[in-house]
Image (cartoon, rainbow, N blue to C red; front, side, top):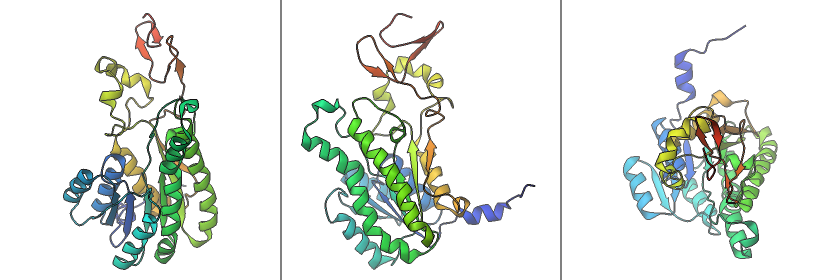
Length: 290
């Protein structure tokens, strides 16, 4: 037996009019695409952004958005954001924890204690502090409120030279599942978006992959391309909407099928790659003869 959802009902499910959404790191890349998507769906969007140029750009791109220039990694900033949102709207319907970064991409043995702590705080510590500060406002919004954590495909596989980054993302996965259980009885849902490589200024594909190799892109990802910020924006709208009313404590893999086909390869030079070159004779690891 099937049930058809009327178009009007679908439109209503994706209407965020009257809702307040906070996006951390919403000035560029995936965060900006998510902020734009919620604004386009009628939400009042609050953006926390550290970079002045990105903050100004997104302010101009999203009329009516409340852009707060701040560094969410700093102690007390989560509480400051909560107080501002409380004063202006009194509640928070959707929290999108988007901030994260590789910070130091080097072998674990080469990282200093300070660098390890910086990676952990950028990808885990600040997320915990911001989330804790926002829970009272989410409770005021009531059942249907949402927390969406943008993690990474690296929360579900290994990544050489980014071991601490991966550890932090795995930790967010465990936090998401556990917090979903704690807040579930109140009707507050908690989920992850776990993207594969997405073309953003932070991970610029034109810089990472030589132009001569981009012609092979369709063979690297099952769905034939790397990610775009809009892919994650669509996932965020879905997770925050009534369409996902029975979805909590899980990860939505926005990866084009990459996790299903994941595989890292060693090159003859001793480096790692997960973007092998394809020749007419089959798979060729960079640095080998075709």
